Length: 83
Image 1: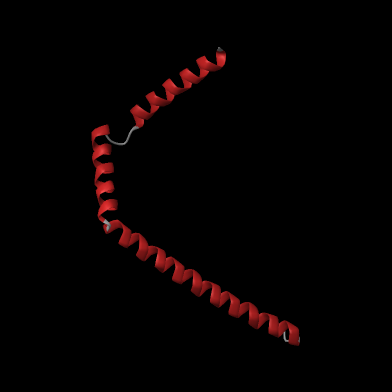
Image 2: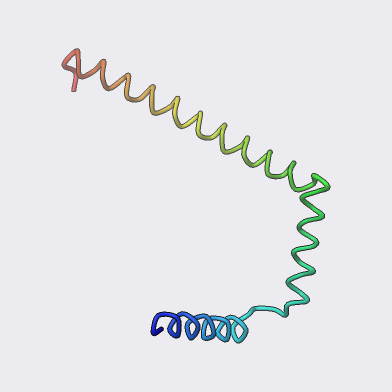
């Protein structure tokens, strides 16, 4: 019984805090969510996300190749005793 009371009390306090500290009204939040949903459905946001993902992938590949090259050079130097 204490657990149930604590659970309900915690939920009530959490809801009150959320309402007090909400950054905008519920109507504004619903409008913002609707706008983002339209953007996702139209595909305009997909192109941006795809471009950012491709840029991140290219950057990751460049970093991998550079690191691989540096490690190979160091390995060869170490193997030859040039360090």
